[in-house]
Length: 207
Image (cartoon, rainbow, N blue to C red):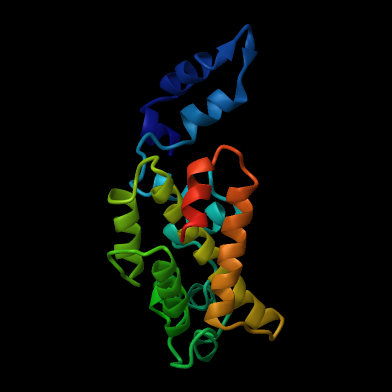
């Protein structure tokens, strides 16, 4: 992969040489030069915003890369049989895929609709590709409301995935309204404990 990116071993060595500072090799510089992609994906700011919980961003990153261990993926890996891949969040016996649980599933769609109603969205969608595209192009920027909506998206994804795991591994379940309460609590806790989010605090207080 490195040869494909840089063309030759000499070019790789030249890049590494540039990563020295005061006769010391800077490993972070090597990582950025050799590993990280030079192309930034459109949804990068949506999932790596500094105001988000890191664990929420990580789950979002997995979803965007189709790396989340959903049942359909576990089935393709031979870990689950075909009759074990249905969604545990809804009663329609649909296969659990990333697109299904975010937010085409009846349960997660209700959660996401509650979030959009709470935030007074003007445009609604429960189709993951449309939601991600919408966030990446229409809700990018540093405005407090846009940042708040990015936080709510990542928190909703995380809480729905947590509810899925709760049902599978603990046999417990919550209602969509309870998931919304969890989302609100998480968002309020993050915003109200960060003095740099003054404008976001004002928005939350008036929702």
